Length: 311
Image (tube, rainbow, N blue to C red; front, side, top):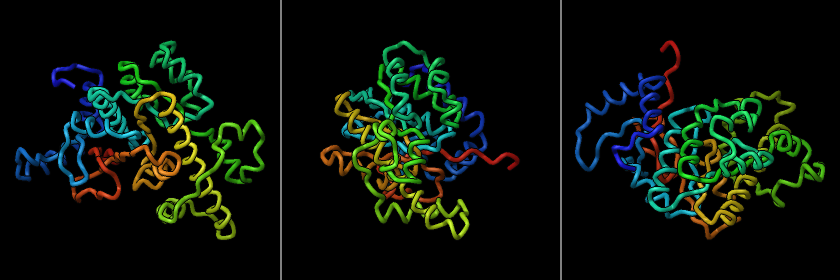
């Protein structure tokens, strides 16, 4: 991407930095002034990409790295505009590096693929996509937060694909098992659901504990919780592989950070389904205080959480 390009993405970055992240930006700017600046190790700013050691990567360099992978999994906090701006920038950088990707979306279930097909063909505009997908009823996170991704896809002619299963089907399968699904409900799910690894189970325990189930229901609830995660991650990996085969290009997977970190979620299933397809993990980094954990991801982008109102 040329530095002089006046794109909608650049405008959105300015709006984010001047708005909800204004306080965070000042905090990190103050930290940067206190650091020794060198050409080799500049202090990172909000939105910048970092390697696993914390060194700044230009968007072009990050795109060149990502271009060599079959799957690029980018974790996110669903409602956070900064995360989606970084996703859009990496997608655009991959296209600039000669590897325009297909984009797989966790937040869109496979029954909505006909809508995305129409968007891919130019029938729907970005403005019309929210209503066509029934976004408010099915997703929950603001459509505007994802707008940079959809605009980049439209501008660069990058196809969008749904990766996830409808929530109601996943919930039913987690409660009763796949055997009790109807033929129509079972039709879109993978033939085999890959269970969570011990490492993923340990990671999920903390999230499960936050739900505070009654003791008598906790064992069953934990079983359903793991089943839900396994169905989600396996389904997304299944469709990401299908997209790679059909589109014949790299696949960028946009999903919640819990499905990406450490490679325990979607990437672990891809390792079984497509062992020859190399995977790159990209995760948000929420602060500069500590060095990034290289076991978490291969590349990071600096997107602090927005300040809590009143603080």
